[in-house]
Image (tube, rainbow, N blue to C red; front, top):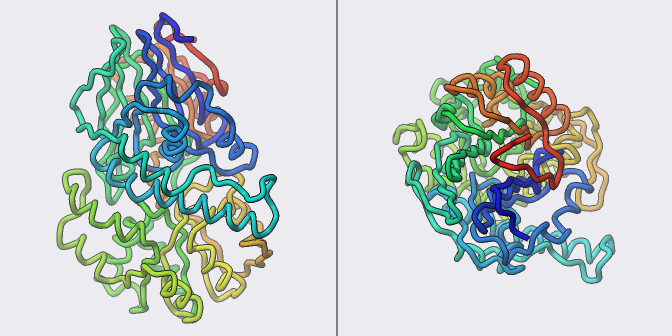
Length: 460
């Protein structure tokens, strides 16, 4: 049933850092802001299999903040299950989704085949959440909208995309509903990101929905370029392999940039560097097509890709596991949830002369979080792999604003929102940010419950 008063409902990202999904309802229209996958702990992932809280065909439009799967990865399932409206996104986000969503469908199918082979699924055969074909079909629903170009969504709602930094195409979503405004941060970038420009400062809004990925911590003040140089030199000198677990979109490019600068200064040994991620390779051209969104100059961009050997085929990837060190491998996924990096860790993880670098946030319940917590045994493709390689977590490579960055961004607002909702963070991070917002800014703030509905005109 559709309500008369504008409402906001929290369908995801309320007790976890994944599954971003927010429903705005006004004037008989339903708009879903973000349509992400739940990742990490099994109890979170199981939400992907539950019926969507409202019938997909009852949703009039989907609006995406950026391309990462925890914000877009449920789109193919929503379209398959009856959603027929537009998926509205920036040009950069649309380009990246053409890579990310079909790849996600392919991985879903691979995991289902593996579960069938292992007999570890309740279904026989195991069923993917959606297929690569479902993902490709969903791309037909995408409609591109530029930054700062207002769009009438119907029901008295008007959408505007605002630059968020973070990754290519990432946007804050500003929605005007009559005289009310609701503002979603999406994933907010860093002011000092080496690749992306900073997020646009917060203006006057009535309701703010903010992420809190790093709401309880600050990034290391250590220079990541210098730290990378020390790690690579140390591991290369002992003949080891440096394995970067990198998000294929955003983090891989940042790593390549730092390695390029180190190589130019002769600050690291001249050892082979392999970019073993077809998605990251394909994404490289998209950064070239959108120079207005990032800090890279043309010559620096060209040099950062010239230092790496681009590995596309599976056979080339397998050969890397036989090659041995010294070498550097950059591969996905960033939280070790799947992808080619797992094969490299299975091959090189048991040897103490090698190193594994976790290059960003590790959501609870992922293999990356397990390693970061100090555990040294991983379950990979049905086998227990003992990890003796050096493990380094580099939060200073993150593309997210940390707690100080989020508070600093909010301080620019000309007035306090009537209410700030803290989402997209683990419970400890979300509550820590809530406390800081109330104490340091004097704003009303709270962490919403899963599936909670609030009145936009009288947020509580």
